[in-house]
Length: 191
Image (cartoon, rainbow, N blue to C red):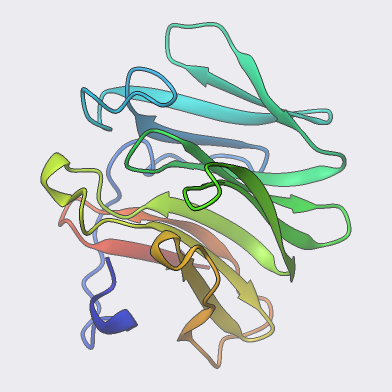
């Protein structure tokens, strides 16, 4: 959660919680989740999940189980995974044309939709707080860079509101990762 939709006045960086503390490639991402897709009955900190690009398919796998195809999309170049509070996968990916797309569950429509946010650099996605007691205040956060600014969008706004988190960055800046740190603060790691 980002109180008042702004960064902390004094940065409080921390070490990411696993598996966000792992360095991965842009074509594979890891996330903690529940026992199965659409099953959050045991919480969201139970199993390690992986998503990866395999040709035109987004393959998802819970540790210890077989990999399955979540969806297909042509020309995926980068991918990231988050689960919402109900264990529905939200997947951000970057297409070959440079556009950032998000496949997410729209609870208003009661179905998965794909939203195109146009050109962006290093899109990342995370559920900001996976703890059981935070289910009413947590959000899936989509973050990316465009030009010299870091932007983010929230699930509670149906990802429809683009907010600037930081401006004045170098256009060479990349967003390495986002997620909850051990100090229970949402981190955005810029490099």
